[in-house]
Image: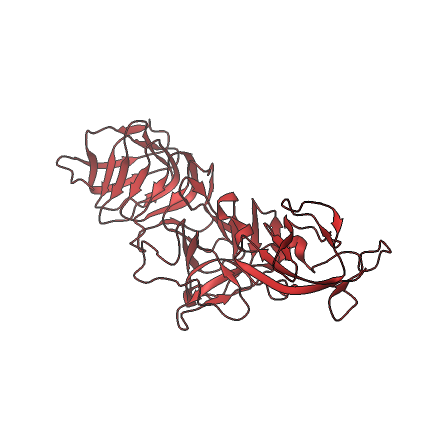
Length: 391
């Protein structure tokens, strides 16, 4: 941040009923004496704040306002705001933590903390609350909470609010959201290899993660939106999991699925209880055990179909196929000629030649063995085998 060459030195004591005081210096307001706001007092900053003395005995309202420039808070002392509001179109950057004691209003702009410095955060204390958070106004960086139950962290990244929720809280927790690949994180001195997983997991998100810190066991609720691209993690929401990078084993652990709300473009998932400090970061993953074991469903051990319209084994049917997006089925005869090809196959092949290059389409294929290749999830997984057609 650019060093400030000039500042105003104030020692202020504001009592209940006093007129609002607005700091409007060219560069910054620097405190070299105590500031105290009594009940009903108001103080508005249209400039930066350098807080080098006590600014923590407040019952009034403090606001930061700007429509044309970024404002900042820094200094050697943490300011505590009883009622606090932010309306800074070009954001409020904080380089020292701030405490919220009662109420905070998000009006416009982001509050940005240095995400490489875990010690700087917006701290919600005792019974403090907030309102007005949105995709245009949230905390980009670290937020902490002490002793507030059912607390939703108003955190986000990339112009998107992405909350994390702590259901019960008798302790202290700190969190931030990162919209980036955990394999190549920007603000951590290590990577979180999404290929290193426990046996109960299949996929790990490569798009986003959260950093949650705390020494007490807790469950968490993570959220997702359309940018999370859940179909690439799982074809079934019930197979979604909260996952965490274990600091000791250096693998992704399964932190469970204790309830899901929503759909593939918007929703939330609740984890089992765990100790956050045992994990470097957490994100979304999936457990696809059982779902991936697609087999031909017939009554014949030789995988035969008998397409005679009697309602029994008339079609080549794959279990669980409906949950896979972007599948493709190709079928060849014994000489390697393509006789059938279908994107998003619906388990309705009845032994006919329907390929576009076939001269006589819809012709029934003769009795014999045919070979299939079933591609799943944009060809990321493949099933191969044969099927015997009996006329």
